[in-house]
Image (cartoon, rainbow, N blue to C red; front, side):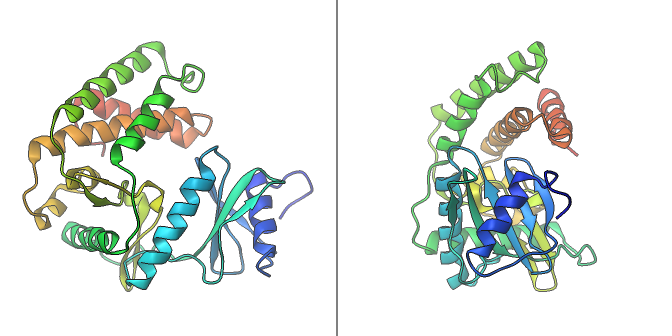
Length: 279
């Protein structure tokens, strides 16, 4: 774990929480640190997700509950670690959940049709799992609050921030003016939230599960994947794809203290300004 004082707080919290279930990690590694800290509890095939935001307990607990229900339906997801429950660590001011670790096998072929079919199956399972999901508009409202927080968005240049705010609000009004059908969605089914395994695609990071138009999920997929879905509204898809870009840009710039998030946020912003999908 390194010398005293050099261990990241998220890693410390993950190790402490794991010990409550009798799991001792002697070589934990920080896999990712953005909105949550993601820790591989080596040598065990277990991932800990550590959240420190004000809404982390509700978000991570809901994700864990939804995923537990999906496992019973044999849904294509990475499952919660069996026997664990969400842990709220007052000493670390965080919430920790535990998940089975799965490798992303880059030797496994992945085509757009397979991605679309897998996501369609996940949406069907979300509809069957019996859990109440929030509207996609609740997530958009949280984005609006973050976007208009001057202190939280201080890393952005003034001109870029003005563009992002005006574009987001314009797109949001267009969405609100229309009549939307809602169905269960993953919420953020981009490439970083799916794993390639020998058993097929497995979806991760279900914090964003919600109800909304199917076009919202499709906005994150390659174009050919849309063909497996019926009655896709291409005009609505264009609108929500731009809105999703604005949302991703907002949250990336809100976490601009992480260099990779700043880079990703700029890519999303540039794509939004140019009216294209980021490559």
